Structures are given as C-alpha cells and as structure tokens.
Image 1 (spheres, each protein chain N blue to C red):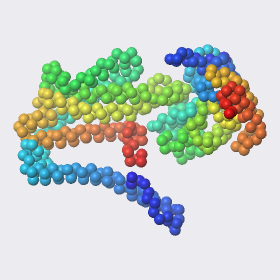
Image 2 (image 1 turned 180 degrees about the horizontal axis):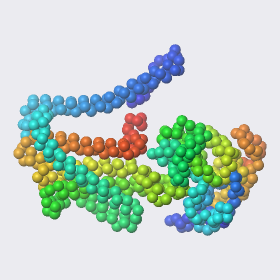
Image 3 (image 1 turned 90 degrees about the horizontal axis):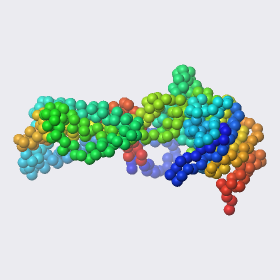
Image 4 (image 1 turned 90 degrees about the vertical axis):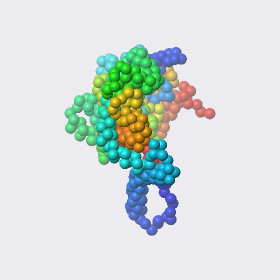
Amino acid sequence: MAEIETPGAPSTALGIAELEASLERSRAQREWRARISGILYPIGVVLGVLAVWEVGARMLGVPAFLLPPPSAIGVSFIANASLLLFHGWITTAEILLGFVLSIVVGIPLALAIFLWPAFSRSILPLLVSSQAMPKVAVAPLFLVWFGFGLLPKVLIAFLIAFFPIVINTAVGLALIEPEKIYLARSMGFGATATFFKIRLPNALPAIFGGLKISITLAVVGAVVGEFVGGDAGLGYLLMVANGSMDTRLLFAGIVALTVLGVVLFLLVELAERLAIPRHIIAGDRGVHETA
Amino acid sequence: MQGLSKVYATRDGPVRALDQVSVQARRGEFLSVVGPSGCGKSTLLMIAAGLLSPSSGTVSIDGRVVFHPRTDVGIVFQSPVLLEWRTALGNVMLQAEAKKLERTAAERRARELLGAVGLSGFEDKYPHELSGGMRQRVSLCRALIHNPNQLLMDEPFGALDALTRDQLVLDLQKIWNERRITVLFITHSVPEAVFLSDRIMVMTPRPGKVDRVIDIELPRPRTLAMRETPEFARYSREILNLFLARGVLCEH
C-alpha cells in the first residue's frame, strides 16, 4: 500500500547520511499522516452519513415518527439530558454489577475447570448447554423470581456475560508450551509460583479477550432485562419512547446506550493496556503493521 | 546414568525410546550426544534433568540417585522458551527469583552475562525485539546465572541459521573454557559435536542405544579453521561411518 517505496531517480549526489535522514523524515511523515487519517477518516464518514440523512429526511419529507433527522435527535438528546442521565446511571449500575459478578464467578470457575479434570468433565456440558439456551427466554422467569428491581437485570447480564470469561480463561490457562512448565520445574518453582509467575501472565491476553467480549454482552443483558420488565433504565426508556411514538427520544436513547457501551469497552481495554505490555495483547497487531 | 530405558505408551502400543543406555559424565567435561532424529536424545536429557522418570535404570549425581527435577542445573532447550512479557534481563532474572538469589548481586551478574554474549544494550528489549540468535543467548544466560555445575543443552542451535550457529558455538566454547562446567550437549550436527566436545556419545536409531563413545583429542581452544584439518575430518568421518553402517545415512 502506501508503505511501498516508489523508486524515484537514484539520488547519487546525496551522501548516505543525507539519504538516511531524508528516508527517516519521510517515514515519520508517513506515520504521522497515517495516525491523523485514522482519526479524521471515520469522523468524516460519520459526518457524511449524518449530512445525507439530515438532507434526505428533510427533502423527502419522511415523517418524524419514522426517521427523525439527526438535528431533531440532537435537540431531543439535549432536552432530555437529565432523563437520559438518570436512566443511564441505572443501566450502568446493572451492567457493571453483572460484569463484576461474571468475573467473580467466571474466573474461579475457569480455574476449577483447569485444575480438576473430573470437575471439568461434569460441569462443561452443563455450561455449554446453558449457552445454547436463549437467555431472553429466561428473563420472564427471573422476573417472577426476583421482581422488578435491579437484581433480575444484573442476573441476566451475568448469565449472558460470564461464559466468554470462563472459556477464555480456561483455554488461556491450558494453552502453554510444555517447555515453559519444564523450565519452571527445573528452576525449582513450586506449583503456586509457577502459576503466578508463568501460567497466569501467559493467560492474561486470552482472559482480557474474554473480558472485552463479556462487557459488550453485559450491556445487551441489562437492556434485555429492562425490556422484559423494568421501571427504570435506558431499555425501559426505549420502551416508553416507543409506546408514545416519540422516535426522537428513542434514537436519543440508542445513542446514549451506544456511547455507554463504547465507554465501558474502552475502560476494559485501558485496564488491559495497564496489565500487559502492548506487544502481546491478542490481536493488537493491526493489518497495517503486518504489511 | 545406569542402564536407562524409557518406554512410552502410545496408541499404537508401547514404543521403546531408550534401551539400556549407560554413560558416565566426568566433572568439567563437555559431553555430546549425537544421533538420528527419534533416537531418544531429548528423552535422555529430560531424564538427566529429572524432568522425566526412566522406565528403568537410574540417574545419579555423586552417587546420589535423582528422583525429582534437578534445580542445580541449567537447561537450554531447542527453542529459547522466553517469557514474552519479560525483558531480556527479566528473563534471566527469572532463574534468580526461583533460586531466591540476592537481587542486586544477581542483577549485576545477569548484566555481566548478557554482556559476555554480546547483548549489552539489549537488556531492556522484549523477546519479540530480538533475533533468534539473541533470544537463544538470553536463554543461555538464564541457564548460567545461578552458577550451575552442569549445563544441559537440547539441540540449542538447531533452529538457527548457519552463521549464527557458528558464532554461538564459539561463544559457548569461550564460556565453557572460562568455567569448565560439565556440559551435556544434545545435537544432530556432527561438526558441532566434534568442535565442542571432549567426548561424543553416538547413538543408534530407535530404540536408542549407545553405539560408540569417541574421545576427541583436539587441542583447545579450537578455532573455525580447525574444521578443515585432517584430524577434525577423521573424527567426523568416524561418526558418519557409524551412521552409514546403521543405515541412518545412505550413499547412493
């Protein structure tokens, strides 16, 4: 792509030092341009889509209850800011509680699966079939059991979100070169030290991969819970807006949920950056860097 | 090592990897094991390190029988087996942490060792920033930092290019000359074995038995030019002839 040098006229007049300096300059320039375009291009696309949407909705006279123009959604967002904030806060609490519960239950469960083959053999089929079951179908049941409060939403978020953590952690712990374990033993590390110095750090990229999937699923779970039976939260707000044909508020709610989801995802990613050196984060090496 | 045998249970029935192998390494000796692939060379090393237990026979050090993984040795595997999340220095220090060595002294020693194999300035690089040869050097430093009295090496240079191999062989000879620790060196490279060793144990194809033990009486320190001398060629020839006789090699 842009990385490939185009052969120009051979610059025999230049010394090798000058050639190096100029190459270094053009490399730095290329890198800078790539970084800027990585930010500007997506913004440009979004703005373009919004502009087409705005103009199209107005020119074709699409009724506002079907597809309100972005400006109207923006106005509604600002007008309902305190409402969105209130409900958003409740949804955030449900998501985070569900996510934390997934970690608290998922990681020890994965540990047990890894440590005791008999446990793994008896529990894994159950786990897998629990995932085949559509969680939305269980939501009404949770409502009957736990009422309309926070708890059923947290539990649904947990039910959807914990599985990737369990699987990724268990696989991450098991996936290790046997030589690393031999090495640890020949160095004289005991079982505990081997686990904390070698096996756990070795599994961290996989664990964080699971956490990143899990946080997005927790958002889905919380909203599903609110759909089925809630009296608060962004999901509930969407249902209310839908019922009163307030499509602008509906869109504003969707925007709020999207922002919430992205922010939570970025927070998990930030934790990952802090926990492990950048170069071993799973899938972090982009397509461009491999070119 | 006395009468070592190792039988693996596999789906196709038991496989005999080692058959009654006995060998005595002398203190401070460079002992190589050469043999075709699958003759149980690596198994032999794992047993010597106490990481695998033999099906029969015993490994003993100074008359004491080994049951557990031995922590007083340094091991270098065919792949460097570095921890990706630790720097070169951090990987060498792993051994010091395992042995609970005093930190500042161990770190000074780790830096010295890395410097001795030409890695000064690379202490804070991560494995993915190092070349294959550099990684294997880090692995060598890690095997030496606790001053082991035995170094076990399992085809350590097998995955490297020819030039890097030559350099590492020279580096290894220098380190061995300075410390005179006992080295058990597994390889399938005949010239490498002749160049480095005091004695070479040649093994037969599976099941691995001791075919012949050859004393190498070339003066030390050995130089690359020595590989062209008639004595060097005679030793290589002797080993190759053994391989030809056993059908490991076949001239058309």
